[in-house]
Image (cartoon, rainbow, N blue to C red):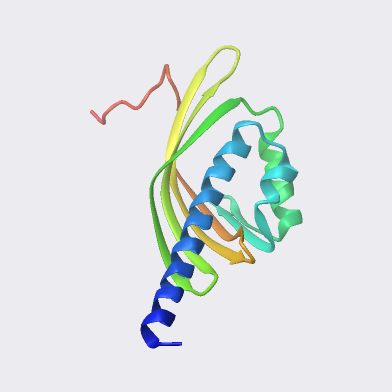
Length: 151
């Protein structure tokens, strides 16, 4: 096989992996709109790690426990992911950086929040899973409090 053809095949493989990793973020947002802890954790590799301000949760069982604790009695939410940037790290591994926004509603309040995701995604045999997902919240507020400027 010529060098040019091999380079093209490698480039196409990286692009396919990046698209599968990007689609994983869509699946994550979609499952969070009607979540079960098991459905969220299924998006992680068996040994995947979730990093949040409260700490790291390693392995699918720990990730399931994290979402079980956080989703109990949770408000109805809608998640939006934007400004997605992918970067291949090595064959089968893609870094995905993005911003997220969520809206929430409860019986007596509405909420709004945003932050960033930094994900390392494994792509194996056409399936993408989070190897490491870092969630960095920037703001979570209700609409009455809002996001006022500092005095």
